[in-house]
Length: 311
Image (cartoon, rainbow, N blue to C red; front, side, top):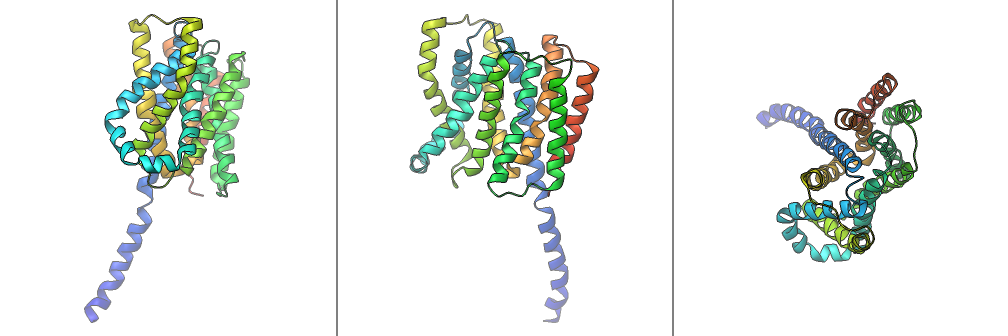
């Protein structure tokens, strides 16, 4: 009894320390996955802009998801089949997630890429974290002062970036605003993913349903606009968006949402306009001035403040 009495305080201290440090690992992993997805998606905006004149937007989206489906199938098809009863019970959720995150969102982005500079696309997409936060707050989640402050600072940087000399609005920006609303809604919807639905199985199912929903628009696009020439300049970008921007990035983002929630992941997403502006400057020769650089620093400060906040 005496030995147990002497041992218990040490064990309880160790137990408390383990409990205190346990949440930090999932949060760190969630933040890392959100950063990975954001960086990879930044490249897809540049790709949408680069392919805007050579691949029709709907066909760009269709072949992107065909490639993504082929990549995910070896990992997710069997799991989706094993969970087919659960998927059938929540078919409405699956179809809505597929429509928002796969069918509509990327088609809108590609349509915007026909007329909108890649830097503008990234800036406008940075509005989606605000929508994610509003959805989460409406669901009763307390955001906390530091997280809200980080969200506001990063949002201010985006607004200054859009309103500065380096940005000029075009008609295609309306497509990007619609795309930002779709992505924000999709990210918020992920919080309601049915319990027990495997991540890889869910990813495969949404990719499959989203691709099937794209079949009618694909047929119309082929009939009206014709196909495109499969050259290295079109095939390699499509492989990038299919493998990296779809299979890898969506898996990373969905996992990040499950670990840290849409609001904190959304604050990290504010890095997008910074990454897109740098990539478009390096690859497409789109100009980046000092005003844009200052706004990017403001965005980064907001991300650091908001993403690291626990309350």
